[in-house]
Length: 206
Ligand code: FNR
Image (cartoon, rainbow, N blue to C red; front, side, top):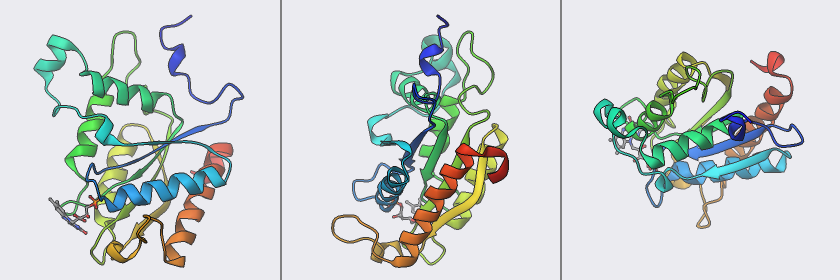
């Protein structure tokens, strides 16, 4: 059995697997709430969905000397394996200073590092992604997603044109963290349905 068989994507029945995570580790993160709402919408469409939390994968800032001495840090390796075992990534990322947070860039940088016997960018190439952002501001985090889209495309990920931004997000969730505005609920449902379509008919949805 190949060393990487364990990372093969899709379930035993061949159905695609989707990994959802937020680009924030903050306890009351708006983007974590949005990630959860999106994971639930994906599950409602029947897609095999994993909701992950980057708080469970604390990792140092990428350091080439550390990598040379010790390889990938344990949480970076675990997060990379999580990415590898999924066919699509759905990321709800905050906007920081018009871009996406270092937390997300760092996790992707570590996961992009090849390990012995592994093909270049094997974690990312040929995968699909969809992006969302929630912000207390009026822009909904749209500017940050532009940069995140560009990065993912650079490493071989097809990023769906459908994306969701939730502006004035302080008012967008109830006390249980559920979306309350019809427009946001509909946008998240549409994105979930587009992810499903892209994974069953990739050529049509790209
Ligand atoms: C922000 N925030 C922010 N918001 C925005 O809409 N555009 C921006 O450029 C920025 N820039 C920015 C920089 C830094 C360093 C921080 C810490 C914050 C505000 C941000 O959207 C807000 O803190 C969100 O609540 C962060 O997302 P979570 O943690 O709630 O998911």
